Length: 103
Image (cartoon, rainbow, N blue to C red):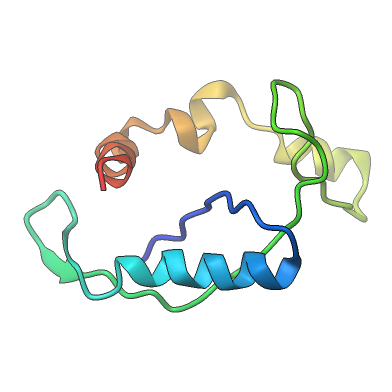
């Protein structure tokens, strides 16, 4: 099983952000973990999958990410999910989200 975590990094430059992100990722490397079903393992930090700048102040309604899609309106509409279909509302993963926040 693998998880990809997204975190916020405050840094003056992109190089500083990369350095800080790597340092945070390595903090849990090698720590013991459990998947909620009793299966034990260890955290492995493999690296970064993305490093994106945030240009606006973090506040309600601030844009933090945009993606350009070269698709039809029909294809974009097909990507839209109802509330219950969003990952945040998938209660099968609630224990994973809670345990990650407690670390």
